[in-house]
Length: 393
Image (cartoon, rainbow, N blue to C red; front, top):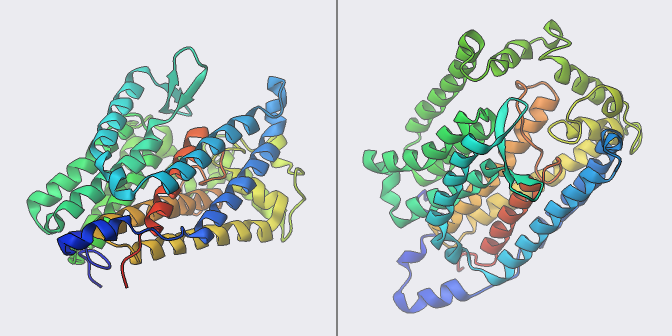
């Protein structure tokens, strides 16, 4: 495989052909769009189902639903605008600005952010009652800037100086997010950077070393948190009880146990939409990180399998877009966005089934969170824009 850019880079086109090559548009990937919209609709239904019991205490059982619908509407508007009125190469021109603004927001979050479940993620907009998570923007900002950085000079992936610059771009938001004790987003950004570098460089052996070092670093952080509480203590405790949640059934193992009960009680076809018992009495954050457990409890393994199949199609179409990309820039952006979606799905499902330690990762397009769904849909808009400009046959 040509690691310098699947399909060849646009900078190699003859000068008189470059304008036509960039401006020629084709139909977007309708399969990718359809799967995304279906998942968003399923997410809206399941957020309503999973949240209505807890929302009753606020006096409005639709409060979570309307907030999620607002985020989905913003995401749909972003998809329409990015797909129809922008070119992915124009998007890349704003990469540095978007990256700088995102990091400024991450710094502001550290000083003025709101702490939720031990992590400082939310930055409230004064006087509005609304807030957002800058860490969600950080994922896309890193994807765009790393793609621009490597596509400008692909040899940067093969030199020590180039790799230092690459690492610095990824490291700044990682450090800021880590200071906010948001380890799950750190893992996602690191995975995105790793995969994008893997695609751009022909040296396979260095990725084994980097991957092993990254895993060792995460395990080391969790061990240090368990022993000295450097991340607040609870993340290390979660890691310790992951192997046997029943060691602390009323503490750090509680969510995992209740999630497993929800999955086990769903059977093949589930209890029926709206009939979950876990969301009423036992499972915290049922509309957020553990919504997949409620999906399986109400819709069964059959419903959960359909959702995973839809995610599988999105990942397939995303990688197909990367393979058919016209240049290195679009290839790396497509691969980065697809990696972001795939990693979040894997981690979320892994947490719900207790396959991996508990960490707060939303299920893309489905979990409650206006910032998450809007940013994720905007990222799909960029991916759809890339499918408009495939490589020339």
